Length: 131
Image (tube, rainbow, N blue to C red; front, top):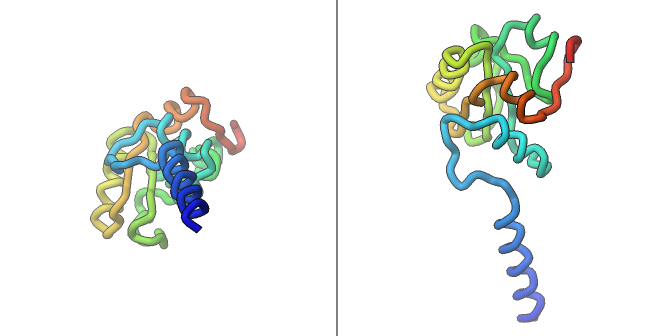
């Protein structure tokens, strides 16, 4: 059994080294960092778009959830320790949304630096009427 246990331990060690789970969860993340997590197929994160509904419908990060800033803390139903990435129409709107979520008890909230334009520049997929 020791050989099997050693092999399992070795595989887990390699997986931990190549899986892009951030060791620290920073309050600000680059679009490339978020994209890398998604490219690896990590489902344990949520991307929230706090822009107005029309902007969201026109174009958004693929898979993002629309929660306009005015409704953000009233509508969100996620585990408090889930990784949440948020972006808005401006850096100040994004920072405000992150602050609101943290104030509502969410432990792992990160603002996507540069929002949708940075996401597109990093080659991230988008969806919507204008995508």
